[in-house]
Image (cartoon, rainbow, N blue to C red):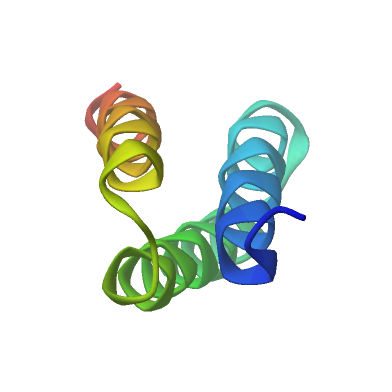
Length: 67
């Protein structure tokens, strides 16, 4: 069974990527903040393999915040 915090972080990053394309500025900021918080929570509670994947998700989130 997969870590629920890991799944949630992955979901929120995907939602943030979608919101950047179709959301208002306020929705984008809220979605990115939610994704960052979820990544932080998940990282502390994941194994090494999941942490590696979370770093990749964090990189994706960084890309959309810089564009």
